Length: 303
Image 1: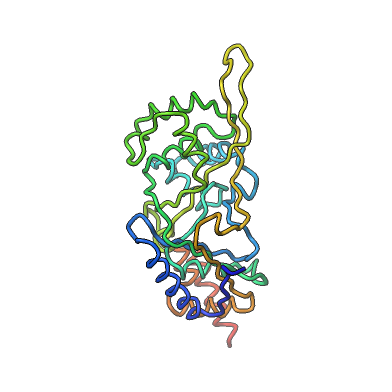
Image 2 (image 1 turned 60 degrees about the vertical axis):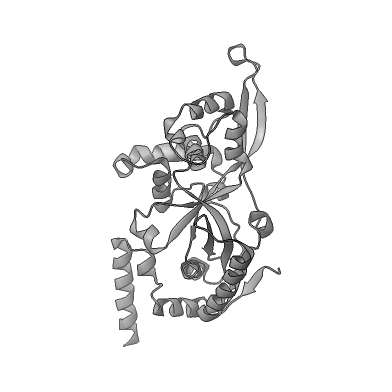
């Protein structure tokens, strides 16, 4: 593929990033609302899709969210829907979020560090000058309302639209004022994903310079009710959006860096020498303890 770049070292990777970034700046007018995003994956063959979609669990989204909130309510107090979803993602729950970063070296680390994929080539996706949103925009607020309050069942689009139009939290957010069902459906289905900058409210997101792609959906079917009580009401069912790694379809001028499996260990060593290491990426205490233990064991094995 012409959009695949083979790299075998950190210096080679950085040089390519500099060149691509210059092209991106020259061909786009950079602003605070357009930023380069990167995504590292430890297996080159994996597709770009969030875990909720990869595990075919879109129809169970509300069940997953509700059950997590039930068993750990104290962990989610006083958080917005988006912050709750980020925290659930952090703990491994399948969500419609795809982790990305603004730091290419962080993405390179994640392309190489997974020992379960050490025999597979890794990949770093480069998305130049993505238009980004704050998590409090109306687009994000609406998708979160759907995920937390309406997902998992056929959507009564008229009832959902009415709820959205009366929701002061959505209207207090900037950008779009919703007026019609078409406005609502555009946010749910016409935009394939949203690039979102989260609040830097936990050490992992801060250290990883984290950002997210929040995925939308596509319409699976529309059913017109024949029941007397809700005659002619329209009900929508949705499917996950699939890109099948078509980069041009995903975002124009995107590139993939391919890191051969045989060079992963070398790249990780180079990254560690400039401060991009496991204990930096995972600052929680349990990971720090594991890092220290492994470091000492490695030293012992030298003697």
